[in-house]
Image 1 (cartoon, rainbow, N blue to C red):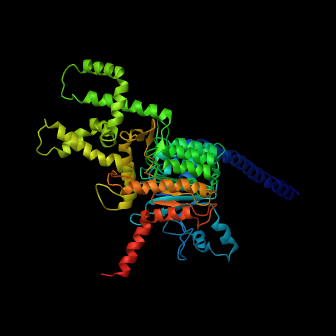
Image 2 (cartoon, helix red, strand yellow):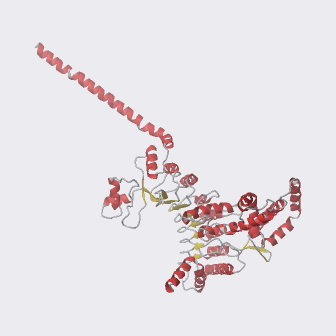
Length: 559
């Protein structure tokens, strides 16, 4: 009985401590796990969001940097960086940039096929598509399509995009931009490489239509595409003011695509106002909009001599007075003493005889100012550099011939820079496409302090002042609008003037006007005589048609 009692006493006692220990350990461990998991996962994520991404040093490999920064920012499922799909069937549209593709990436090779339901969903999965340079495999262009880009993603981009030294273009198509995220994106652009010159924001309508902020005076963007953004006349007004106003002008933008928007006659008038004093834009598309004859006539008016408004005439006279005082103050450059007194006397004389000075400046403008007036600002900062380059064997006292040389050198800078991006000219050759991108920014940056369209040669007729018109714009696309034969008449007059001007013997070197004009698919017949005359005038000016005729002649008469 005692043995049975002891066995019975031991049997319940043995499991009790074990069960108590095990239960206590389980509950304690479970409690610890429940308590430790939030402490080890959730709070550090909140703490590490502002710290860890900043501590990470980007390597310039976009795939690695983006994935690491997303992981440090708390993202579990983020878009992959993949190669941009190619039209030929041998491409791997969603192949990873890494050399060792995973099984998931191998499945993506068939993403364009319609056989697998899985491949259909994989094909539309959010990705960051890139194009690489063929030489060093560095990222050249970035394409993001069809998924929303938020502030957190833009914050990650602000860290991983600046190390991309060869980045040239960013394309965002239907990424759900807002006015706030657009401001964040614009703040990101100066951090990127200076080679970034092209931005495409298509399919991103904004309530405030703040796209004009991309064209600020300090912007480096040379090519901007804003298609399909529901831009109306108000948005066109903001864009026109960004192109130029009486006191400011965009000097870097070379091409602007505003196709597939809602711009009407009023908006076209605002764009035309922006072209009055803009001398950098070479390519403009207003295709697939709502422009009728009134807007077409305003655009055509800017391409031929147009009358200056009263405010423009006043500003022109002010600029001429400014130039005159600078010339008078710099003419006795060899004076050593009494500069302040002479300056005061000259300022007083200018105040007394301002009207006579403006009249003289207007008369001399046709002979001297178009080529030399704007350059004298350049002399103060650039004559020293030019003397160092051209001063081989010349004595330092020979000041006048050096000034003439500087003005001659300045002639090319004043009249030709706007056209150099299309020709690809530059002091050095080799890899013309890359060099042309850099030369655009350098040349335009030089001309910002020199050229002012209001100082161009003008005509005085019936007490009115007429400017020669915008001859810098080379490409104008007005396809599929609502223009009739009335609007065509305005373009015919403009094209006739530009063709006659370019053939005249005394035409200065520089821009010659439109080389390509598209007016098809509007509200007139293609057999319209006015349209036929425009086509006949534009055909010999089109460089592509010239190249084709040369090829045809070479084929017909082989050497």
